[in-house]
Image (cartoon, rainbow, N blue to C red; front, side):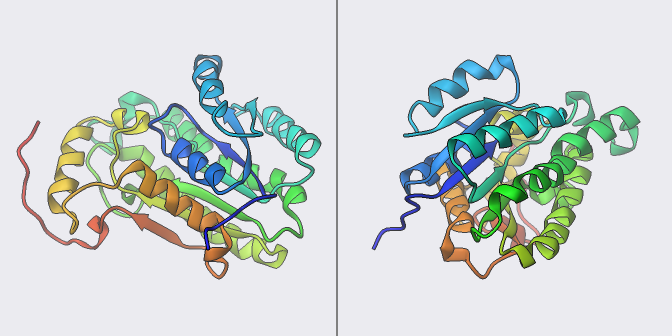
Length: 264
């Protein structure tokens, strides 16, 4: 029997384009029958996000800069009006200044450090707090996106790795808080992908090639594989799972040593 999420609702923060992990998750959830609200961060992204969301039956599209609390409030108000309640949240929001994603981490500016944490980590806590009244009594699920750089040193990932470490700790604490409300909180850790976010990291292509050469499956994950893992964490199939970091990286995170690929 196929998995169905008919009658369920969700919101996805962070869709950028058709190659984003957020969009892969949106497709998987919509294909299972979930009705979605999709947000865009700024006017530059609005047109592409609206065009993508047109493929999702019954979806709504809303602006949301997560550094502006009033915009998060407006998203929740629209969801209450349009959907009545909320069963799931996917938090796929992260940002660091491009110049902070190269060279030595200790050169990180205070401004860049705080900005990366506000957007990439704190926003999950604020969104969760504001979504909770809509999710009460619905056995909902919240999923955020992380990366191995939050656990280990990845060259040039720098301040984003520190922000992801804070994000992963937030997942555990939020899972501890929200369990009594019947809500699960987990993180999805994908391997390197050819996304807009990945393109912002200096030497990202080398990291991509390295993991492809050394992952047990000898490749990096496909977008649809990551999207389907998001579906699993949102759906009742993962009903007993909370506070976890779920890796979809073709096994790379279990590897201790590997070969050095050619640069290019």
